[in-house]
Image 1 (cartoon, rainbow, N blue to C red):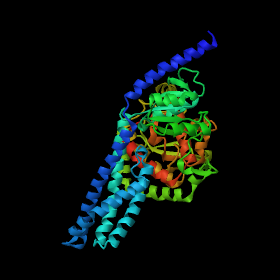
Image 2 (cartoon, rainbow, N blue to C red):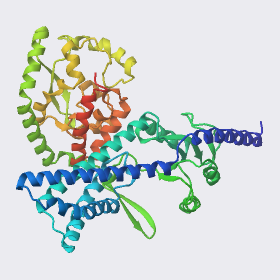
Image 3 (spheres, rainbow, N blue to C red):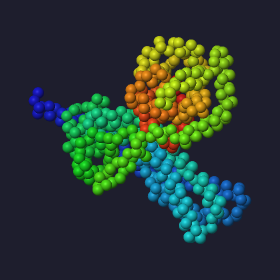
Image 4 (tube, rainbow, N blue to C red):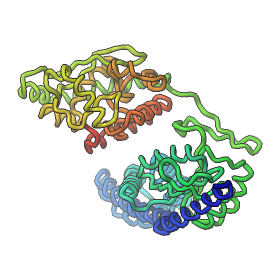
Amino acid sequence: MSLSDDALRVRRSAGAARADVRRTLEGIGSLTRLRRQSILLMVVLDVFAIILAMGGAYLVRQAALGAAGDLSEHIFDSAAVIALGWLLAITLFNGYDPRLVPSGTELFRNLLHATLAAAGIIGTVVYLADIELSRAFFLAFFLLGPPLLLLDRVLIRRTLNSARTRGRFRQGVIAVGSLAHVDGIARTIHRERWLGYDIVGAVTPTGSASTSELGIPVLGPEQDLLRIAEDLRPGILLFTAGATASAEEFRRTAWKLEHEDVSVIVVPGLTEISADRLRMRPVAGLPLVHMDLPRARAALKWTKRLFDIVASAVLLAVLSPVLAMIAVRIRLHDGGPVVFRQDRVGREGHHFEFLKFRTMVTDAEAVLVEMTERAVQDRGNAVMFKMREDPRITRPGRFLRRYSLDELPQLWNVLRGDMSLVGPRPALPREASAYDEDARRRLSVRPGITGLWQVSGRSDLAWEDTVRLDLYYVDNWSFIQDLQILLRTVRAVLASSGAY
């Protein structure tokens, strides 16, 4: 077959792929319409939340300071100013950006900033307009309002993410770049289905292949990108780090797509780096990205240690009746020891005595070696030993593991300084001996009772994903992230997914 025949075959393959992708994209709703509906829903729920906050503040004011006959009249006079002022502040602080709904954190922060601005705007207008308004009502209103507004966003986010996970409100994506980069992004997107992205095709530098390793059809070379985008009208064009277009070509492509119903996402070469470590500083027209160094040392700060000491001491005191009940149940079941003690590897490779409520038969360690091969076949994880149906687990142990109650004695490890509340999972010596250079980075900080991988899938994750998430935590540590992980841990434990 001649070179021209090869080129003709590839061109025909790309044409057939475009026809298939066009049919797929036609079945996906308009991105613009979805965003408009999201904005309308947020505004309606915000108005409802503001009305509820007004009613609640009115009741609080009357109950705290006694009935005021003219209070309802004053509230009625200022209701429009209050509602419009707050809605305006939310709009100005980007609180209605539907693109921020799936992740939530930035949207929540914008909403809180808008609340502070709204208090200033409304207070100023009420003062200048000489509107009589109870200060107790004003304070109660701005204490009740923010939680209700945040609840709106949480409900919208969870509903949307759940619907996208089930296959609704998906967005068709055409990825631009080398096939290796496209497949790398596709694996992440496929795992995080709540994002709502479906990569339906790829545009590569040469367009010479027909499909990627994951079966993503190649629609043509990058030189045909504009024609492909105008023909197929995807919801999103995603440029990976392997895209070869120059800055000028990229700018011209963006100009030509300006009137299309399409969003553009650029995936930089910098991956696994949190947004707060990056700073965009345009210099002479160049968008220079400044990156802070990794934060493993920051995760050892005294503030984190002080929080661990206080929180673990309080939890041990509050949960002491629960700990006693669990201990009695384990002892009555088979008469064996209540606490399971094991050698684990902590920060910088130092060993410590790891504590758990015993959930297995008393000779569980003796039969571990012969069961390791079964675990690899069961989960494909040759480093961390986990079995979905481990016959060594006792009947009370299954309940304890399902809700992670067996981990409670580790609060004593935290109080002692062996562990932290949040961090990478403490490794067994045999596991640590199998670590490669990247995995050993997990030992830079104290191990934790919970961590990013536990709230992202727990035992269902492959070893590579576990390492990736733990390295992300170590390199991007922040106190806010620790608090978020602790909150997500509660939800993960109650859901009991991936716990065995």
